[in-house]
Amino acid sequence: MRKSVRVAIEILVPPAIAAAIFILLFAFSTGSIRLKGLLFVVGVAYVYAVLPSAAYAAAMEIAFSRGLSPRSWKSVSLSTVCGGGAGILIGAVFPQPSAADMKSALSMSLLGAGVGALTGISVMICSRKAKNA
Image (cartoon, rainbow, N blue to C red):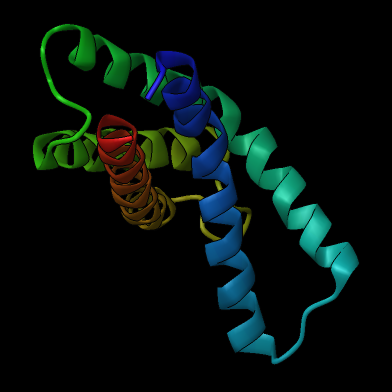
């Protein structure tokens, strides 16, 4: 996989995954979803997460330049840790009005770690397919 494609995945996929998780949680809790609400959640996810995603991508690319293989589970582990860090950053900078304490940062770090793991797995799978192509 080309580096530019990998960086695009690292920056653009995490907000989309986080938005999907929030949308699913909202749908399960309320039993409904509206298109207007969907677009709002996706937009907010990109506003909140684009800078932390760029920092995540930079950290991952530094690790790849130092020899870490994007096709390895070690890269998924690092991606999970970086995602958790990005979640903490998002929770600290943009606290929720109803939970502006450490609980918000903790829940955002767990969400970030999950998003980081899924992003790392995506990069790993795409990198493996590109190698075999």
